[in-house]
Figure 1 (cartoon, helix red, strand yellow):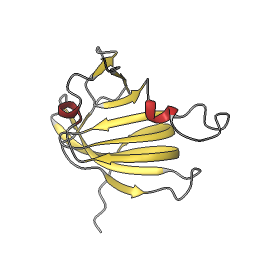
Figure 2: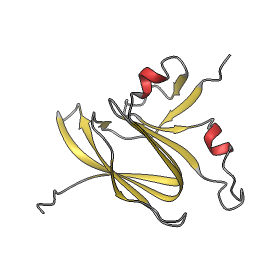
Figure 3: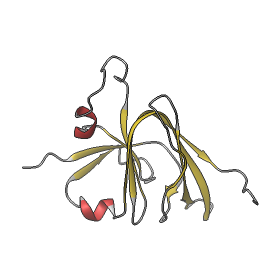
Figure 4: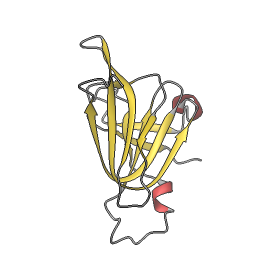
Length: 140
């Protein structure tokens, strides 16, 4: 019997969109940040906006070009189901995080984050994540 992936919602009132994740900045070492841009949808305001996912102290990133829910159909469970379905999660029982060969004292608070859209998802091992709505568009 396979152990189910345990997911916990990250509070966010917008649903990750159907589109890809764009890498804005990529860390060259573990002290730098990672910034990703994607779209999100609000059922309350019936509109779509760009969002930034900002990660501090990144260990590793994985981008997958397939649907998470279809791939892991019966292999995951979501805690805190009263939360809105933002598709922003922390993986509570991460084997990937346990397998990392790093100093546990310096990286003991790191987490496995998972964000899924319609046909792609991204996983990040990082210290923390901050989610921001993009307030203006660049016209460059």
